[in-house]
Image (cartoon, helix red, strand yellow):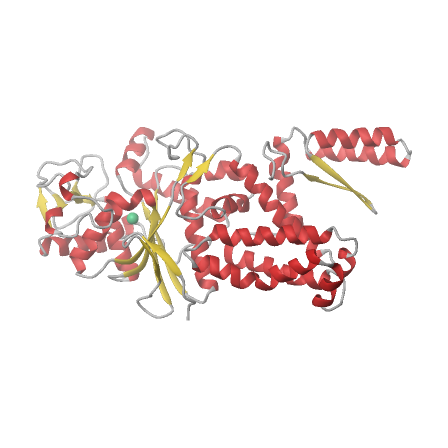
Length: 498
Ligand SMILES: [Zn+2]
């Protein structure tokens, strides 16, 4: 049985306690990609938010069915295919494969179902037929249009007045400017499917109504997507599904805010400012991107500039460093005894660790506040670092650190951060950040070898000069018992951790 939580519902414009249609079960439908290009980090926000949401709900014992579609035939795909001299369906297939590669590299779990428009024609046609039969849709010149005047609730989700609306779908035979296409009559050179209204292809909005119906039934618990989809896409989904089935379409509407440039514009291919996921992941670990999204409430607009990822990486590094410090602590006394002996900083770590699970749950149960949840993790990381300054901490604070490590493990289980070992995290940092620092791994190793020789020869001036040179490239050298180790400083990328 799932634990209770609250969620902002776009439909009611209020934060509400979640009530499932079936106890313990959540059906979640999220609008997926129109696959005509590579996904950028604006798209990835929705993917990461809903992946983390599903991860958290499952951790809280909800039985979740997560459905995310692909729009694999559409005007944009056809236009792009014509420009490139390619077959539209083959082009869509290519970008579906790229998208799946990106999601895997981002560390996201695949949805339970990924329906595609081209594989859902029977359901789409059945839904349109139902709307025609119930007089909510009409045929004109081989196309089928949704009759917005037949739906008294049209505009309710997005809060708009019908007389001020018009749809983007061009077409002769439309009765109202806001009527939108359910079925588009075949045009020469475009892919088409047979239907009771002649050959053609579906409109964009009807496909989600049909795929959600097929995968999750007439009423779905939670419908998700980017805030930019509320109108017209989600408004039209509501109209189609509710007019066809006579049931509420989605009980809760969960919309993520958009990534925006400092200029205030949204990120997009058409804006010419898109950063592709696969390009970004060449320079940063996936968890840095994940943290960047989750550090902000999912409904807030998310500003992006070139300092965003270096800053997120810094913050991520702090979590890993605190965990590493905690792992290095030893001792066998009772935690409360050690805390008494070490004083305020140790007492604080123990308090924060013991209250961590309930604080984490409280944050995430309150409209999925990942920013507040991460705030608790950072607070604990800072406290661990402060405790480690105590001269006896490394020898005695182990039993307290063990509690902190249990807390850090919950960050991984709920938010999907700190999932790596320290070694593989550091190796990834070296591989991805070093190319930006003007040194190759071979050059670093060569300098360290020279420095080791200088140290053997007690040539301290040379040894120090090499260390300084490495520092200017943001390489930190740590001298250990058996030689030196090195790391890339995470504030190395033009943005410091505050
Ligand atoms: Zn959709």
